[in-house]
Length: 107
Image (cartoon, rainbow, N blue to C red; front, side, top):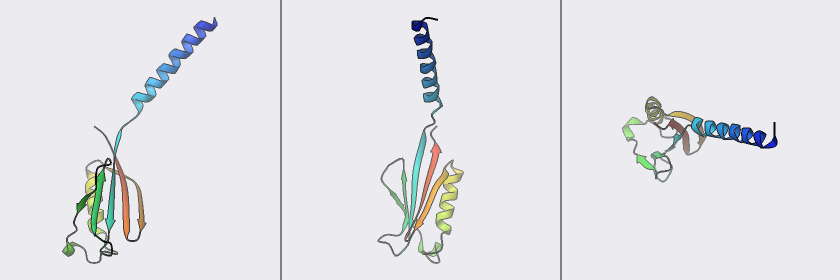
């Protein structure tokens, strides 16, 4: 085989591999759900999806017994997002915040 034929074949294999990798790449939406308790400047759920500004979901006082240890409202909200196709990929808790990072495949 000549050098020119080898170069052409290797270029074709490289381009085929590159195009296959590009098509196989899945696009995801990412979301951050941040819970702050009543000791913070503003308590509630702060939600940002795909880098958009945070939206605030106020937590009704009658649905939480103790903001520092009752995470029922937060977990119900995460469960609702999970039912809508979101998957939790990370979480952390640093008082007074609890943060969840979620992802969902773009349609």
